[in-house]
Image (cartoon, rainbow, N blue to C red; front, side):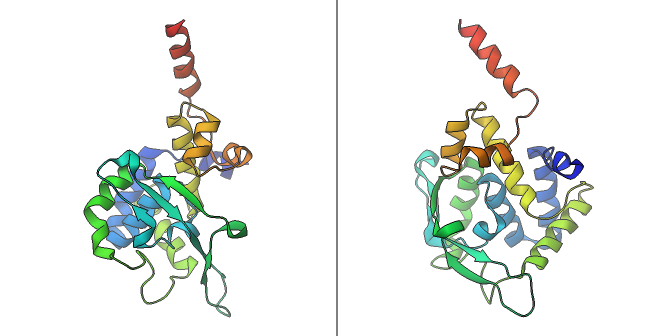
Length: 204
């Protein structure tokens, strides 16, 4: 499937171009939404529902984490409003370590959202509005991607590769995601296996 292959090429360099374009076009809120979604490898429904109290930020980034305790159910229809539910699939919750890029940003900006949702204010943005913003930013950045779920794909791939292709470690970093799910979302960047083999042979 050419669309899947194209989406799997979405890397951190592409993300940074997209993020800069999103900030220019839509400002801080969308910038922060995309930053959290990509680096924590979240579904848009999970990222959009985070609350100030979900983040536990200490002086040490490695002791900092976010709880994913709710998600937005986007109804994709004008007949029924989107709404918040507890947990995500099957009411599950997860606790994720804060990736350093998110820790740095939130350490300086989170207090502006004290005791409230970061993105939900006067109501829930409908999915098509978020999708339109992302699509416009991809186009503005001259990138051949679309929609929102690609940020979860890209973020999962990044974490998988930073773990050295260790699927157990990646599973824990992604909130004990099932290994089959990681295989779906993540793919090794070209040099990951070669780099790991170099480490093995240099130590032998």
